[in-house]
Image 1 (tube, rainbow, N blue to C red):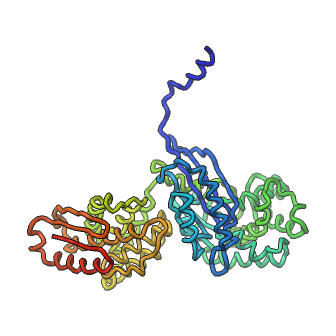
Image 2 (cartoon, one colour):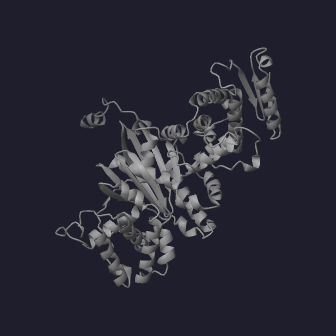
Length: 520
């Protein structure tokens, strides 16, 4: 009887709606998987998986990823794949950072990865990585005033400065613990000469960005990543600094100071064998990277004139998780990026919205027959419609090329590297000849998706050439694999010769790439 009562204890409690999401961070040193549940506007971490891959070890000086490194990465994905069984595409996000960002043959890895994981892999820019790291910290820490967040990765270090949920400055510098270990500490010994070289080299790289950050100032500094976590653990384990020390000497409260870092480095230099130093729970792989990470951190403290740094567990993965759930995001970051560009370059918003509405109408008509299923495709088509004339700010001659350049080289928070390239590519071919040899190969989008979106944007621009509201009538659209047909009301085209002439010219351009355009 008592057992029956226990089994029915929770029957009367109504379960809240929840969403299970997963984020995989393909890092230079490790692959991190985080599975979380979003419920009642809170995130509950269900489990984490971390696999050491040392991807950056296989990146050559000319930025080619070795086959051994690719194989290690694929083996890790095969392990991770079991944790993602049953997840819908919209609940999984995979982001890749420095190593795949730099690798010239990154596409080879992504193509092989697709055979293991049926989800797109996004290669994000350094600044986008910094933004997502800040987002993770902002959602999990109490930020008072302006906050500087530092994340030392395997191949790059990200700096973000913001206030509460809003980042102000975002930068990524190509200095990381794996690359520094290879450059300065590959003999397994910590020599003073090499330590000094590493610190000076890092300071030289940091000199490119330090002034903007120091000018802004901050009230607190937070470090994330496994490297900083390990250094905090070692400092505490070895009692480097004590509670009676003043602020400049640091303490054992989980914060770091420059004097603590330099004292730890002296211990590493003085120790013939790192195993003789008490490193606590820091694993063997991470131990080998400590001198490199420590050198970078000392340089950061010196260049940024940091008094003390605390540590936060949240980083890139948590930033992505919080952004995935609409109810937890404070703004649509992509929308804000597009609005910023539109304002800066004084876009004709009425014309932009005319093109947008036509593009979405065409997309709706052809989506099923053209099987436009790639995630985010409609949104990117819409953003390109809004921004296709951004190049007018430079010149009306070659506007499509100017638009392409601006979108390729602007900071676009919220867009990963491929999404930004896709957006720029669509604007590049919204008019004039389509040069298929200049269309990039994407991992997130098929070649057909790319071509079909180009066609939809071109037609949307062409049909709104008069730049007049209520000019276009209701029309129908039908498609087959290599054909698109537009049917307007009877006699509508015959009294609008400019539209008809432009459609005829477009018919010839599309025919050159194997697409048949019909209109009547």
